[in-house]
Image 1: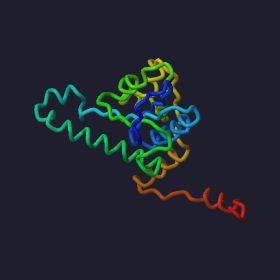
Image 2 (image 1 turned 90 degrees about the vertical axis):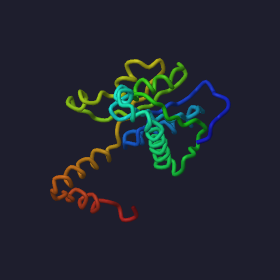
Image 3 (image 1 turned 135 degrees about the vertical axis):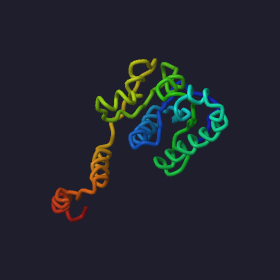
Length: 188
């Protein structure tokens, strides 16, 4: 991704974690940036394992901070390659790795009213919401700019079902695939 010297008034800031939902949000954000003539700013927020407080309490944790930051950069570059085929998107912009919790970090970057903040909005049950609060909800409640919450791809749920069945070593139900294949037109 190229760094631009001038910052147009419009930016599309997107939270990237490497998850399938964030990759869907990144692709959608790139489309929005092209459509608006804006810069694309993918942002990966990272924290030391256990959070900053644990890193401050453990003296050896400070020695590994550069390593955690390097791993975060690699994860961002991998996400860019997964979506665009390389680390350079078709739209100008700036990729950022920011230390901090994802919600506040995204809001620090998307601090202009002309920005558009794009976040993935996965399906979450109550139990998961208690353990790990939603970045999308946090941003929707506190952002000073418009927020686009991108729902997960329908394939993501299908992949989760297959993963669960594999974990429990259950047979996959492929009957619906056979029926769909039989109804496809011959030239497809």
